[in-house]
Image 1 (cartoon, rainbow, N blue to C red):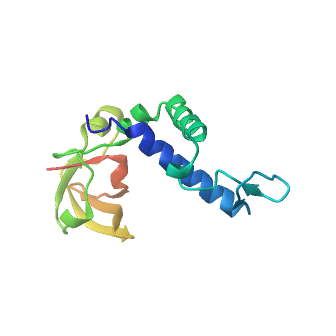
Image 2: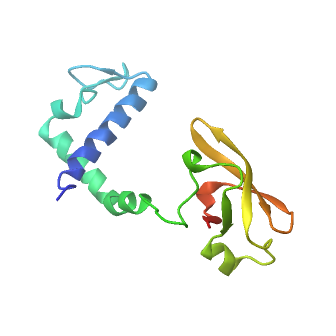
Length: 150
């Protein structure tokens, strides 16, 4: 199984995040813990932690049940219902309403529509503008999955 060691990997990431936060709060690594001086013996790389601290971190991550949360967060949408992507956009690209939008919305402009503009920020598509067959124009955020390709 690909995720067999996921708890160890997530625990290491969690420990790194904890270390970053502790450093930002002014804590430094030291051989012994001293709260007044903000010194902590666990501010070492995860693999250098003692067995008890490593086990405690792994148990804490396991208790959060992150495996399912993280797996559910991943979507590799394909086909016409997948979010529009910057690399595929062109003026005049035909679009319509997604199945979910057609089921849930009232009074949508009639299909088909065509892409007439968009904006990208940091290499990602921020929004697209669609002109519908009745001349109405609407703006959409691709992650909201309102549109589908025709």
